Image (tube, rainbow, N blue to C red):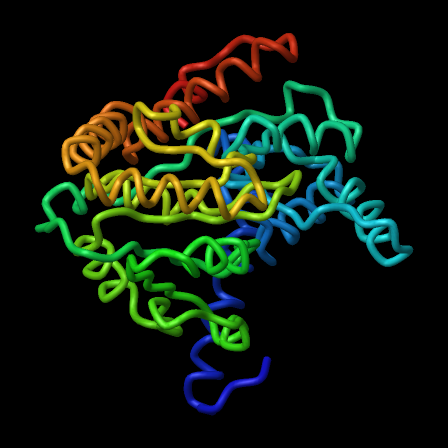
Length: 317
């Protein structure tokens, strides 16, 4: 670990070690007491638990990885070797929860997993955003770092006067932008939400990949009642109904983005209708309680598919 503050380093090391040994204790002494252990994404803790359960053949408590996501398999020996290791390491995992339907199919294919090992559950967002004050400003906001197609978006704004604010990492600083495009780098999350709340629309330009990204920004915008213009790819098609809760445009199509921006800029009633419908869908499907209920249902369904009986513990998991 490389850190700037030695005291912080010792604190983090202590907390990390304490967490690790707590997890080990649960795995070996709490197999009957705990029904499931949940980890998020594919960080070190997910790998550690999966590896321990794989090499020891102790698959209790059941290991569930929420918001499972890995980089796509590439035609290089490093990527192939990585996927061989991950297939071995994650063989003990009971259930992987993905944030898009297409990802479930992709991981089932590349890892050779049965469908019962994967579940699509929509990502959730912060319900406090429902109470956030908003206004209908004069600019479009775009935000995020991972797999963003900002060149296409910038190209779309070159021939229109509408201001565009892009909140991204400093790796995007070299992108050539026009006079109406403003970059903000690595700003606090609260400042991003405030900017989003003052925009008249949110743009989400994404690269076309097997994995999905962008759902966090997408759901934040929808919760704030902002109409979203998003690339039609994995991770947006599951969340937006075209011209009902947002606008979907083809990948790598600046003209389609431009037309969608102009459409929203000139039609306040459409902005309001799409924004209200997006917010209503969040309230009906994309809050933490919906996510927890869906995980419990997925656990019960997985137990049934594998020939077991869905227990009361699974229903509460």
